[in-house]
Image 1 (cartoon, one colour):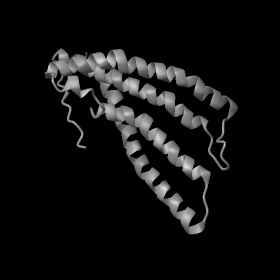
Image 2 (spheres, one colour):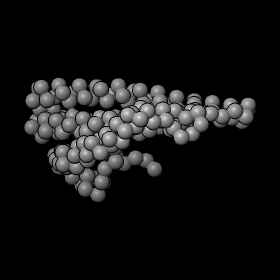
Image 3 (cartoon, one colour):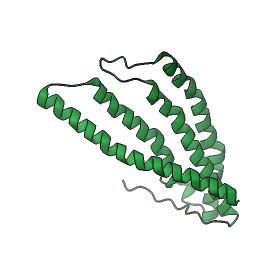
Length: 179
């Protein structure tokens, strides 16, 4: 169990670093958006590459932010079941849901999106917009984002099994987001 928990910690640390980078991407996307708007209205100049850069940053935030959000236990749940379960019941529900739904779905989506990236890379796909960016790097974000989410799922499975066995404590409490 010690080895598995060490693997879990390594995955958690990796996703924590990715989340830290994503936090900066939020600021960068805002600055690019504001700068692009200011230049467009002040100087009547615009570039598709700046607009696409915003989209790329947003895609990275969504795809890699999912694993970071999952690590922090802030993902969306089906509250109808979760809120009425005991702590142990929550651990079991997390374990079963992650093991049988999240990880297989992430691996399937990663597998299915890989040819999408591979084809874009093979042909050196570029944006169809004038001044647009190269497309294959952002298409790589799709399968890699799902792999990172699946890895975080593995980490969460390890922690839930360890918690059910009494090796560690896991905070499985879920607070509804304030609306």
